[in-house]
Length: 282
Image (cartoon, rainbow, N blue to C red; front, top):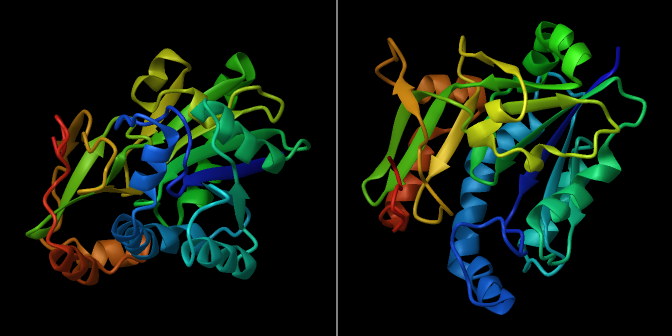
């Protein structure tokens, strides 16, 4: 049985809809997304938090599509191409502004779906989130738990709901060990390769209304960045781990390849408060 793991990571993609922060025009959104200071911060989060999990998976059989616009300013566009050139699992898709975000994401993902696969597990994350270094291996192994459901329904999800929220403000990074229902990171949508929908077509916060699935909470599988530049920043339904370690830095280094003290210094240097959003950080 061939199981493909296919991920989508959006890096400051310029398009219509799909955003909670509204703009009056596409030019206003371009100015917001491509503001030099904002892009520098986004890249710092991407490089420090997201990238280790994108390129360092213990199972090398996967593909992650990094989606951005063809006019993403340099040096960031060049850096993305350099990463893709160095890591065969990474592909960069340049998608021009489109009015519908779901259609834009489908355009980025569709060329990378393996038609010969029996099942395709799609997952998505933002450019400040991360999956654990064994995420691909674990998702492929746990597919067996879903097979009866998939054969019956044609699709199903596996929600790896244990992780750490990295809540950042002018005082530094506060790591919050949490179980979060369908946070959207480390949420795998399994379906046939000819399915017309992509993982973006299913709102993660109500995934249970779209399909059946399972939740797995035995080990930390996701990091979610919550900071000044978030589009939303709401934590969603969550509750603490039963017995978290006093110091999460060793766990983040081992499970995600993330240097928490260095990230904390970066955030303190930026000295930015949380985002001005109604539910930010809650």
